[in-house]
Image 1 (tube, helix red, strand yellow):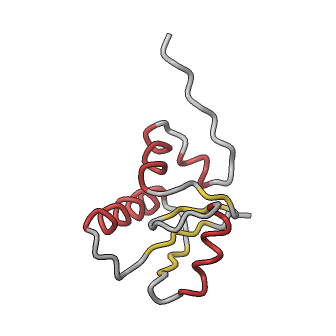
Image 2 (cartoon, rainbow, N blue to C red; image 1 turned 120 degrees about the vertical axis):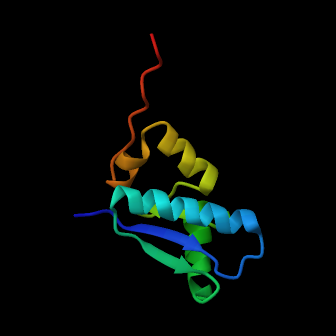
Image 3 (cartoon, one colour; image 1 turned 90 degrees about the horizontal axis):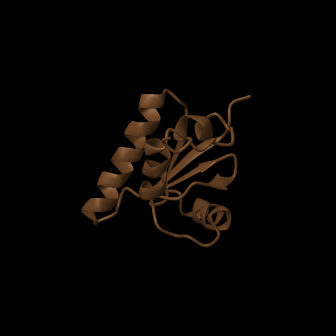
Length: 102
């Protein structure tokens, strides 16, 4: 069974960086070919508490959650991608850190 992937966003953010970060995460998800639910908190305010509960109190968007585990916002997701671990996370697997160069 595929993991449940949710990307929490807000269509009314006035911060240019928030819009750019949201677009970057969506690009990463789309490039991996995974299905995900985008939850726009501007139109689904009732889902905000769900996001905050899973993230341990974090209210900033965008946020990526996989199977009720928060993987944070853009910086954290980009770190996973840079480390080659994002694909495993999106499959519901525990990422295996890459071995340091010898």
